Picture 1 (tube, helix red, strand yellow):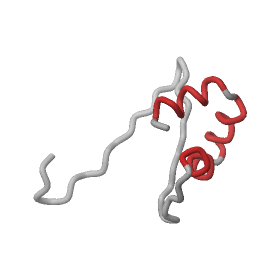
Picture 2: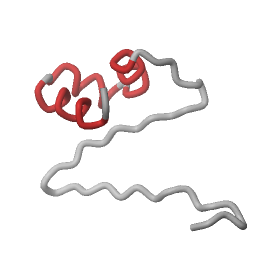
Picture 3: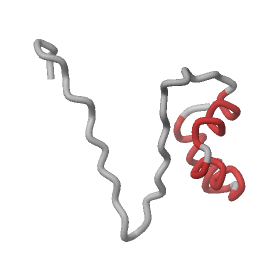
Amino acid sequence: MDMQDLITRAWNDPQFKQRLLTDPKRTLQEALGVTLPAEIEIFVHEQTPTTLHLILPMKPEAGENR
């Protein structure tokens, strides 16, 4: 399952979408059949016609290519 599969499932399955919004880590682990490290946090936001989310990537360490 890739990102587009997850998005399509959320569009077509309201219960999956709600679980993804309220408990994203557990929902992704179950959907993908993986266990994520405890220190990993996952946030899922739904874009709407009046809401846009901007994700800032991590700042590269000194000496890394940008």
